[in-house]
Image 1 (cartoon, rainbow, N blue to C red):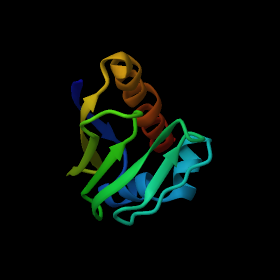
Image 2 (image 1 turned 45 degrees about the horizontal axis):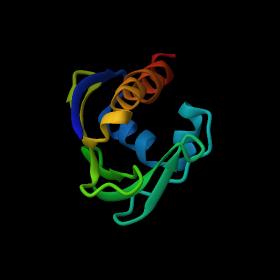
Image 3 (image 1 turned 90 degrees about the vertical axis):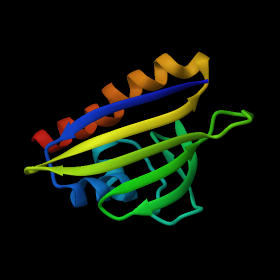
Length: 126
């Protein structure tokens, strides 16, 4: 199991980005794929037409999202923490993803940068 931590900058306010990460209709706009998401603790979610599935653990509106991502039958949960910080007119995003299975590490970390936050950066640059 491996951990990943990285920072991203998105050209929008933290409250708007938080909504883009927690509202199913908005997620579908920037991913182009169906999404199931509710900003309610304990609910399950799926993104990119069920390519990413998990459970929402906690929310701090406009500031923080904590989720468990499912990777089969692993003992320790894979936890994603997204922390949003205001940085002038932009948002600095701190991503922490723990307990990523070794065999999925490269694909997951590339996906964070290219697909997940890369899509958000493109969406808010236009």
